[in-house]
Length: 186
Image 1 (cartoon, rainbow, N blue to C red):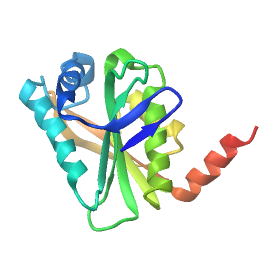
Image 2 (image 1 turned 180 degrees about the vertical axis):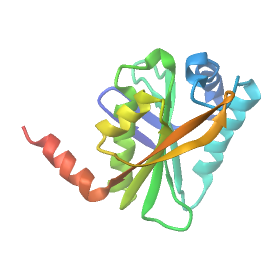
Image 3 (image 1 turned 180 degrees about the horizontal axis):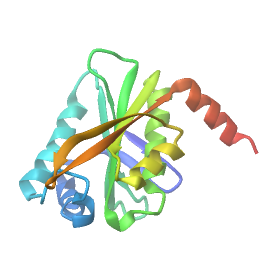
C-alpha cells in the first residue's frame, strides 16, 4: 500500500527498513515520551516485523506505513491507522518521526493522509488517538487535524521514574468532512 502527499510518500514497510528505524529510535529526543531507555537492533527488527505481519493479514485491519521523502526514499518515520477490535467503524492513529525532521509539518501531513484514508477508503465513522500530555508537539498535530480532546487520564502511565498524564482525542467523519470542505474553499 502507498499514499502520496505533497512532500511525502507513505508506503508499506520492507524487511530492510529496520536500520533507518533504529537510527531514529535510538535518539534521546525520540525516547523522551516512550518507556524505553534505549533501542537495539533486535527491537527495531521486531518492530518492523510486526508491521510486515500486519500487512499479510486478510482482511487487513492495520496499516502502519513508513514515511519517506520522495526524492531520496529516506525513511524518516511511520504513521498508522488501526481498526479497533470487534468493529469496522472505529480506528486509532499514531505517528512517529525522526527528531531530525521535527518542526517541518511532516507529522501533520502524514497523519492527515492517514485520516483521509481512514474516512474515505476504510469508511470509518470515528478515529481516535492518544498521547502523553507533555508531548505538546503531538497535541498540536492532532489539534491541527481537527481532533477534539475528549479526556485526560491522570497519571496513568509510569516510565522514566515518573507518572505521566495521557490525553485522549477523537474525530468524527462528519467533522472531517466539514473541515476539509471548509479548507478547500478559497
